[in-house]
Amino acid sequence: MPDVTLLNIGRTIRVPDGETILSAALAEGIDYPHGCKSGRCGICKSRRASGDVDLLDHSRFALTPAERDAGLILACRAVPKGSASVAWLEDEDTARHPVRSIEAEVVGTELLTHDILRLRLKGGSPPLQFAPGQYATLELPGETSRDYSMANAPGAEVVEFHVRRVPGGRTSGAIHDRLQTGDRVWLTGPRGAANLRAGHTGPILAVAGGSGLAPILSILESAVAQGMRQPIRVYIGGRDERDLYGLDRLARLAAQHGDMTVTPVLSAPSAPTDRRTGFLHTVVHADLQAFDGWKCYTAGPPAMIDALTEVVLARGLQREDLHADVFFTPTTAPRSVEIAAAD
Ligand SMILES: Cc1cc2nc3c(=O)[nH]c(=O)nc-3n(C[C@H](O)[C@H](O)[C@H](O)COP(=O)(O)OP(=O)(O)OC[C@H]3O[C@@H](n4cnc5c(N)ncnc54)[C@H](O)[C@@H]3O)c2cc1C
Ligand code: FES
Image (cartoon, rainbow, N blue to C red; front, side, top):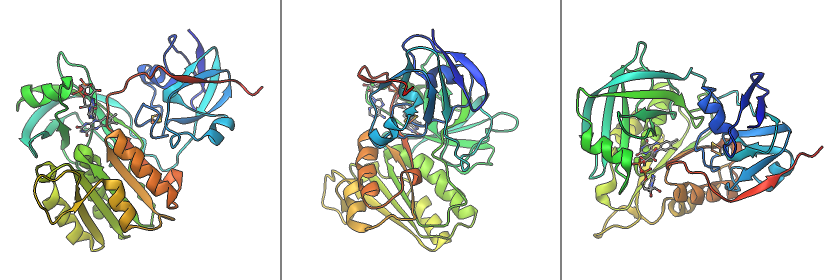
C-alpha cells in the first residue's frame, strides 16, 4: 500500500493497491479539489513532485499531453506505483466551505419533467453551506450514495436537487420511487470546484443538458443576486419538448438581469417545433464566434460536455475558464498509461 504525501496540507495517506490518489484522499475525509472523478474535468489536476503513477484513461481536455510531460497528473486517475508526493493546483477562486455530513429531511418532491424529480431537503444547523455550482453526496438508507448538484442559490434553509431517473439506475430509481416527505437522508458536502467565480467580469456561457440545469440554475440565481451584469448566454438541452424544464425560472432571471438570453435546444423533437434543434454544441458553435475573456459553466452527460469543450476551446476559451460537472456514475477505467518520475 503506497504512501502518498499531499504537499498542500503536509499529510501522508496510504493509498490501497489499485486505488487512485483522489479516492484515497476523499476516503480519509480530505477536501481534495475534484469534480467529475473520471478524468474529464481537470479539476483534480495536480503536480507530481516525486514517485511514479499509472495514469488511467482521461480526456485530453482534462490533461493535455504537454501538461503530462510537464509533470502534471489527474489525482482521480493516478494510481501510485510506490511512495509519491503530489500537490493539487491551488485555485484562488475556488470556494472552500468545510465538508460536513448532515441528516436532512425530505420536505418536498415534485416531478419537473417525466423523468426529473425536484427533491427539497432541510436539515443541519447551520444548513448545508456551499458555493453555487457545487454538489453533495446523497445517501438513502440501503442504497449506494450518489452525487447530486444543488439547484438553488446558497443561503436558503431548504436545499433543492434535480434528480433524473436513469433507466435501470439504482439510486436515482430509489429517489424517484421511494422518497417521500418526512423521510430522512444523509448529505455530505459541499464538493466540486465548478462553482461560480464571482470576481469574473467578462461574458458568461452557461450550457446545461437535462438535469445539468441544476447547478446552472444555482450559478445563475447567485450571479443575478450578486449584481453580476455582464452578458450571459444560456443554452439548455433536451431530446424533446417534454424534457425541458425551468423555462419560467430562467425567464424571470433573464428579465431581472437585463442582458441574459436563454436558448432551449431540442435534439430529437417528435413534432414540428419553433425551438432551435440539434445538439447543444452545434447551436453554440453557430451562435457564438469567440470566447476570449469568457467563462463557461456547463453540466450534463459526458458526451455533451466533451463535444462542447472541443467547440469552446477551439474558439478561444482558456482551459481554466471552463468549469464543468460531468454527470455520471464513477467507475475505474481499466486502461492506463504509465507516468514515470522525471528524476
Ligand atoms: C459531480 C456530479 C454531479 C451530479 N449531479 C447530478 C444532478 O444534479 N442530477 C442528476 O440527475 N444526476 C447527477 N449526477 C449523476 C448521479 O450522481 C448518478 O450518476 C445518476 O443519478 C445515476 O445513478 P444511479 O445509481 O441511478 O445509476 P447506476 O445504477 O449507477 O447506473 C445504472 C446504469 O446507467 C448508466 N448511467 C449511470 N449514470 C448515467 C447517466 N447520468 N446517464 C445515463 N446513463 C447513466 C450506468 O452506466 C449503468 O449502466 C451527478 C454526477 C456527478 C459525478
Ligand atoms: S478530472 Fe479528476 S476530478 Fe475531474
